[in-house]
Amino acid sequence: MARQITYGEESREALLRGIDSLANAVRVTLGPKGRNVILGKTFGAPTITKDGVTVAREITLKDPIEMKEKKARVEDAMHATKAAVEEGIVAGGGVALLRASMTLATLTVDGDEQIGVNIIRRASEEPMRWIATNAGAEGAVVVENVREMRDDAGFNAQTGQYENLVHAGIIDPTKVVRSALQNAASVASLLLTTEAVVSQLAS
Image (cartoon, rainbow, N blue to C red; front, side, top):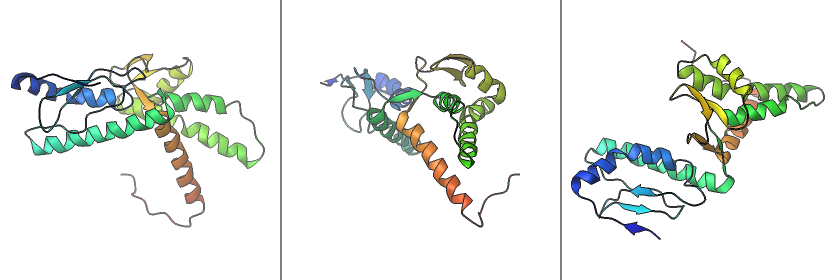
């Protein structure tokens, strides 16, 4: 059951300034037991809920451009939360795909299928490699370091530290990771049967 708490204007503004943290916290899941989540509404006072499924739907801000951006963030959070409820969560930061690629290293098939396995295994390392590179780290080194770790340990691009990413709140919906890999494979298959591709040349 949701409880409603009335705040003064100053407190309300402070709550709204923290909406980025809210969007990040609920972008994947509120957890099986639910979490206390602040909800900003277009009318009335903000509310705090602890029902495990409710996420912010509408946020009121003075700047219409900022309002549009924040609402888009919350919509992303809602979709990610729904995906997490459907299939669960995995460690983010490319850890789940890297662990999958390590499993593929032990898979042996015949003929051209082995080439396909090797391609997927190599491609599954790329998200982590690019996340690290974009954070100013050496992507190849990060991948090798995380490969030596276990379970949900990975590279936190925000802090530059290695830690348990699930405990740090860096998680992805399993459905999103799975769909991304399947869609990438679908596009790759299409390219193999296409005589021409329109692309932007790298600078």
